[in-house]
Length: 122
Image (cartoon, rainbow, N blue to C red):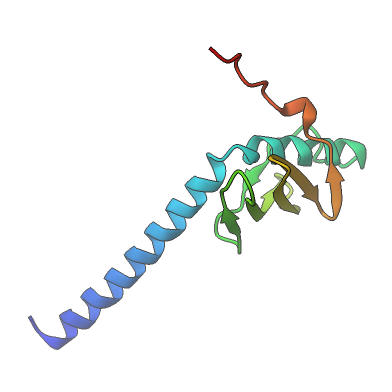
């Protein structure tokens, strides 16, 4: 293989590995327990602030900077949820005492109404 092809193959491999890691990370966030809580929290925040984006679909901005650690004792996530008008809202979610707490643009949001009750034991 020529040196030029080796360089191209290496660059392609690095880009593919990066894309795979971003894709896996984004999938882990949107499939986590806190993601629907965060979407509901942002939707409530938009309604409370009488935003023109209230009641419009929100999407996860996967190409932005984000952080995610899924754990029942010390989970943490930070990411952006954006409205169709391209206005994005910073979401910080964290676990305390076994439950997720959602912070949208610096405002703590009550997420109890979106929590799905656990099935009865047995």
